[in-house]
Image (cartoon, rainbow, N blue to C red; front, top):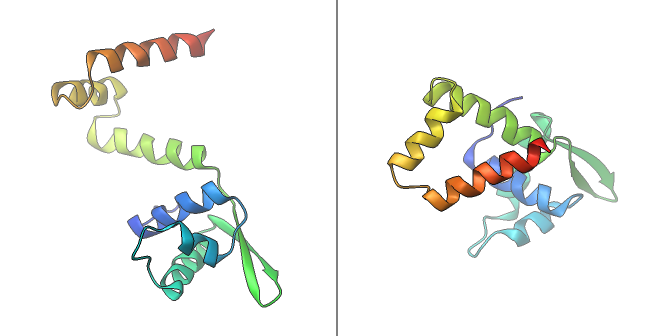
Length: 120
């Protein structure tokens, strides 16, 4: 799975939200001022080339559908992030955010509860 640029990732998030969509639908999701239609079309073509979306011809345009689930993308790139920045340790990652006060004690308790419920 090829890494996405920031612009590609933003467009892909909109595509995941929309499901099957056209470029005009994606452009409408951007906050104003939205990028030009041609820019978004180019980004979506890159996503197709990277096999993140599939295209189906509808009249004189294309309808795009996600080819990769959002959860699959997150899992793949979070694993790389943890490996590259936290010595492949999720414990180190959580510890880092706790030390930097980016995550509270209550957040940690909520995470523990979520983990414990997931094991049931």
